[in-house]
Image (cartoon, rainbow, N blue to C red; front, side, top):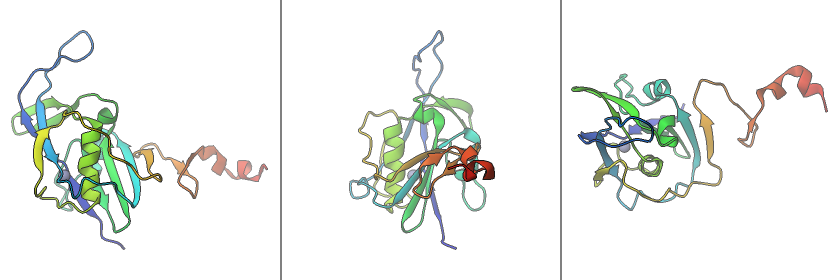
Length: 183
Ligand SMILES: [Zn+2]
């Protein structure tokens, strides 16, 4: 079995108020995470799967082998040729998300481009120590990373998703014996 390496974004909170769309202004704290150095902030060339994750899926995926949480937002697990990124659905949707630290519960926000560039850098071998990283506000505008053509975006479990051999999502109903027989 291949060894899988797990890395994640560690956010640092800074207090601030941000007005969100809607009737109420919610207290969203400014958070920071590391922007990778240029040598790792390059296109990933392996097989990339991005799992759009619920908070529960992040809890399951983003933890050390000992079970300690490493992130509330995203993490990457990779082998030599593959990388699986779990990213919180709220980040994909541009919404705030809940973080709990020693002071209690608060809302954080992170732009998707930053989350993916951080995690793809880990796919490219950036050490978990975030060596030579530059701490930036997690909402710092930046361009999306260039993703490999073969990138697949999938909902993290649950639900179960059925894929064709070339990694396209297909209706799981097509797997039923009755449907397989229909040509
Ligand atoms: Zn990280």
